[in-house]
Image (tube, rainbow, N blue to C red; front, side, top):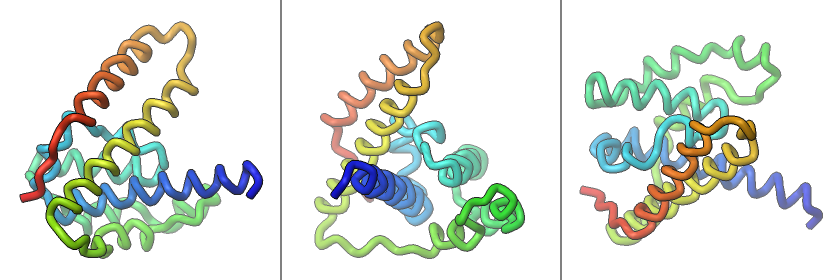
Length: 161
């Protein structure tokens, strides 16, 4: 395959990872408190998932649970249509209705979750590194902190209860 086809495939993979993590958080609200130290809305580089993550994380902070209907209603189809984006409220609704294909064991699910978080964080660091202004010292310091968190995360065991 040529490089652009590989680039598209890689992007789709990242989109899937971001979608997957949001779905996991919606399914298992207790997960939020275990991962919020490592993952923030800014780590979701896909615009639609970034917006969903902002609202979702805010809901978790305020009420401790997800309110899917409220999130879906925030994204009228016209908004996406005007922006020329294919995503719509239907795609967001699919986040809440998707079910993770049952991975055999709890260990496998925990491993998949950890790998997904690490992939999203690595992508976020890469994305922000590429878009960082040379004079942005605060942004640079944040990247250093995020890289340290990523190293910590790689050693961590995240349990799904």
